[in-house]
Length: 419
Ligand SMILES: C[C@H](O)[C@H](O)[C@@H](O)C(=O)CO
Ligand SMILES: [Mn+2]
Image (cartoon, rainbow, N blue to C red; front, side):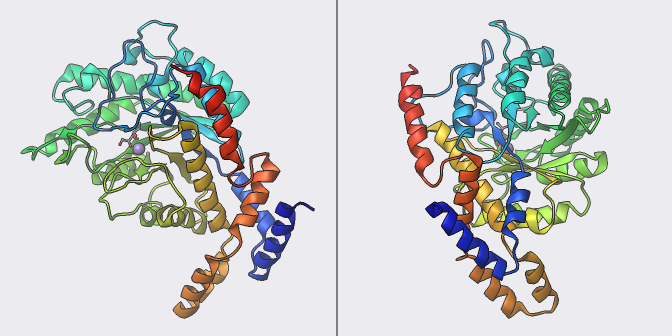
């Protein structure tokens, strides 16, 4: 027996003593896909012919070598990351990752054919695809307003882009046999205090109603809307605030996207899950790590991430919460950034799945808050790592930090050779 296996067997017994079935927990974990965000691989630049600088009040810092310059390079980098991540996962694409054969295709004219290479590759490598219209990094977003613009021509352009994006998302969902979540995030807002907070929100609601006018088969496609508190250049007012989208999602039956970096710095999204899922069917998560602001740091196995995973598992929300990642760090190896973030997310889910939740719920229901606190605290030193290592080994992913050597090898052989 290898040391990984002997540590696993002893951990399994320790969890069994707590009433936890480790094999059942691992089977549940294998069934939870994480949607990797393609934009970590190229600093949210995309491959649009004649594309603009990154805009929309989001910023990527760092200049680590090896950024992906083409869709082929990005797919190769994703394969390198996926090889170090146990389980089968999804990919979240933005419209600016279209492949248009060297021709400039305006965003309102994008079509499924511009993503056929992604779809073919996804069939081999992934459990599903998700999608996003790109309503930033474009001259028609320079005013700071897109779907809520006061200019009807600007609004029209972005409505048409979002309609085109839903068709692309639908094609992805049909091809993959699992619904594609197409998420609309817009940067619209004001740097300074506005007088009229209402009119842009009314225009946004009208525009969204036009975007979503056509009913799409939920077996292949789901619509999500993402709120934000502030961005760079929209510090005082964001049109698509949380309250706006919560109301919109509730009244229109849409998926609500909660981005961990899009709330007040001391506000967490974990507590929101059970609250919004009392009335909404589904939630999309953008798991991110804000440091002092919406800085989009790589997610780590910290208290916030564990609390999100705990809420998903304790609520039995695995099929109602779509887990996507959203961070972009250009100061470290970008492939490693994906591996660190996804492995951390899976570890958090595993920790939650290994919790004796029924017992904890029972002591809570009995009013035994002493036992609740004591058992939760004891849980923290249970041998999660031994189960995690077994899961990695069983799935063909590297055990422990060994993945870093493989990613370093890819860096030397491939990334370092990019000019
Ligand atoms: C690139 C993404 O769509 C973007 O990060 C968005 O989801 C967001 O969170 C903006 O702050
Ligand atoms: Mn986001």
